Length: 205
Ligand code: ATP
Ligand code: AMP
Ligand code: MG
Image 1 (cartoon, rainbow, N blue to C red):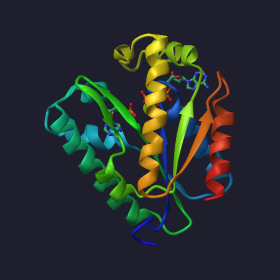
Image 2 (tube, rainbow, N blue to C red):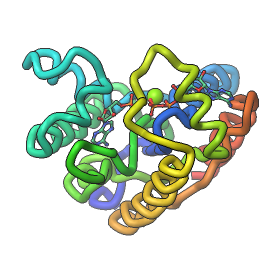
Image 3 (cartoon, rainbow, N blue to C red):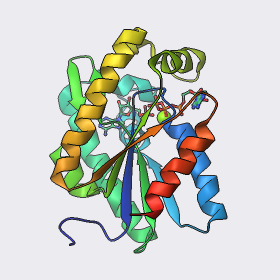
Image 4 (cartoon, rainbow, N blue to C red):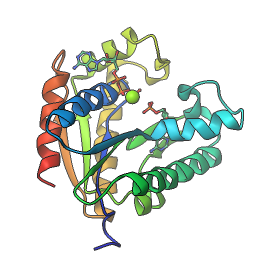
């Protein structure tokens, strides 16, 4: 099985920018603590950002999707390797690694898969969760959250289209390592319910 799975269980959490991945995962961390479940949550973009800042390429995480595609690929590959290296030191069998990331990245020169084969060869996911919500609600979440620059995601219709691509990309990525795909709805002001749903899926892996 080692060619198909890492020793710990891997859950990749995807969804369009502003849908609430990071929020849901932070609630999930609290729930896991109460249930005595050992989990590690990492943000894929943060691993990429560390290198991008060291190399003085960007000032913040929202600038990375506008770097050259070759550079994004390099950052992506290194992030996947470092996440697994770090997790191997910390997690045992029956423990969980949750990765906050994207199945599709809207770059300046097209849609880049966030989970292409070279990334999956490292992560070997048991499950790919797709966090979804109403496109109007996502648009409002993006607009209200002034800590980030998500102005390049356009109108409600553009977000709807991106959600379609993101769902398709998640299913395409799932094929390589026989990962399950789970859709989790993050309803307005109900992020706690989404975290609960995700933790229930995770306990069945
Ligand atoms: P990105 O991919 O850009 O990192 P994200 O999916 O991680 O985005 P968050 O940063 O978690 O999104 O959430 C975006 C904004 O939406 C935040 O201001 C957050 O507080 C808000 N938010 C998240 N979930 C909900 C919800 N269920 N109802 C209302 N607001 C929410
Ligand atoms: P986030 O905070 O999740 O929005 O991530 C910040 C940025 O990291 C994203 O806008 C992308 O530029 C980059 N990123 C995150 N995950 C991936 C991935 N799997 N592949 C390529 N780029 C990614
Ligand atoms: Mg986030």
